[in-house]
Image (cartoon, rainbow, N blue to C red; front, side, top):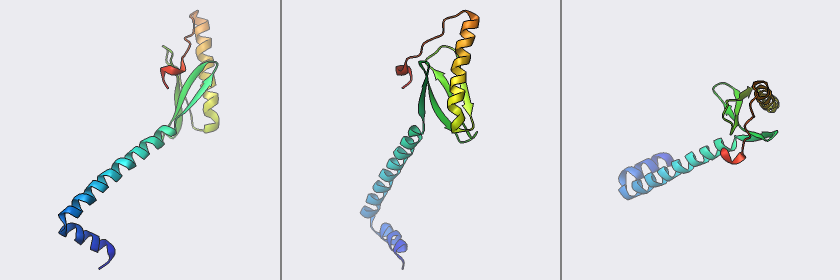
Length: 117
């Protein structure tokens, strides 16, 4: 009998051991989920440009980095398929937003980092 078979047989025969095993397995699963969530959160980065902020995230489904200018009433989003390009796209989104506000004769919103961090 190999070790794995021995453990399976022991768990079947000893109900207290089975309960302890199940409790440890559940605790392990919660720890694994917590580590996975922390890893996903750490993948997000914050950029700042001209007093505007954006949180950068990654879409595995689409294979792109994306973000939006945070803390403003209007919607200004951007994306890039490369790490090198995402900051340039963010700068372009902010510059486009400021230019549009100027053309429309409206004051551009100022973002506050505390609104989304």
